[in-house]
Length: 406
Image 1 (cartoon, one colour):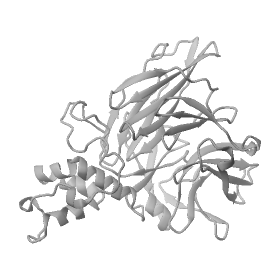
Image 2 (tube, helix red, strand yellow):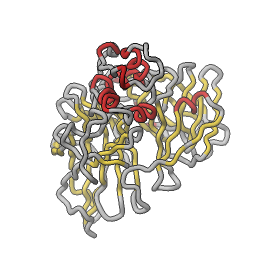
Image 3 (tube, one colour):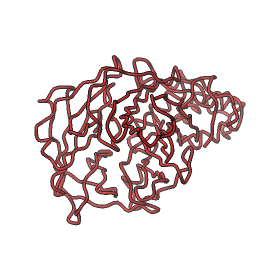
Image 4 (cartoon, helix red, strand yellow):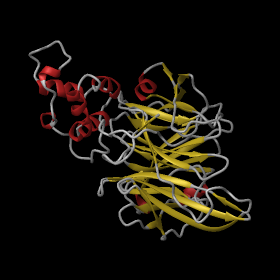
């Protein structure tokens, strides 16, 4: 890809209280495209802050002043916070992989899923799209989606991708004590978690790599990537068991959580990079299928029972077994044979819960204990879906990284 200046959007606005729009740089009146000559520049800026990303990108082509405005760290920061707190979810999308076509990724509008009778899904041109590549969504933070792309003949590649501004960054290759291509006598599995460390104002990716030789587990290597340094490091503290396949780490309050194959919950603290096992109710290991999610700001656990219902738990206080609380029991639909619930996607302002049952989106109403399937056109059976906020956040380091366009 051709190298270009990265000036459209800064990398990340650190979380803080909502900024006063008066403190955001404003556009000069002579550059305004509005036909209202007496409209104050500060008011124009306040209006722009409330717009979705797509029209903002159109305005960036008007003049250098417009581009400088929406490129400023203050504007990106305030726009992200306003978008993320939008109560109608008009600045949010839902992204998912298609389970019967390993090469496809789709997205749809979150607000449409919640409030419209019919929603349309769209095919996405994700980075490195290829019939021989298999995409997997690791996680989404502040509009950046961490995507892992695997193939038949090598270790997977990782990308940070903002699909709203159509920019991505391919992460530097991590180095394991194996060849980049598999040998007949060795095999590498992988599991990733995507995180934002607010103390260091840095995005991180944690990779856990079990390495097999002649089908026997030799060792587990753990690597951590920092966007600021654009580099990988080894972590030697991991003493856990094999992690559950196809389950990415869940980020809650500065820690990433996984399930291992014995259905124990393990976590890594991003501050000191230490691993720990999380205490949990005894009932977790008795259910038929256990999975982790994030409900509001708490770690959640989904305990599917014999294809008849799911118990939804949340952990209110980290590491305290007694703080686990069961908040819902959701009955499976009558046509539930062979299907199970996936972790909650969202609770709407009206108290309805958006989640997946099997490979379809459903809406659960806790008031009357009803559940209904949602009508999505251009839909295909999907794997675990994730919400993302449509933002201007860029996956590049300032001034030093190449700009790539999907």
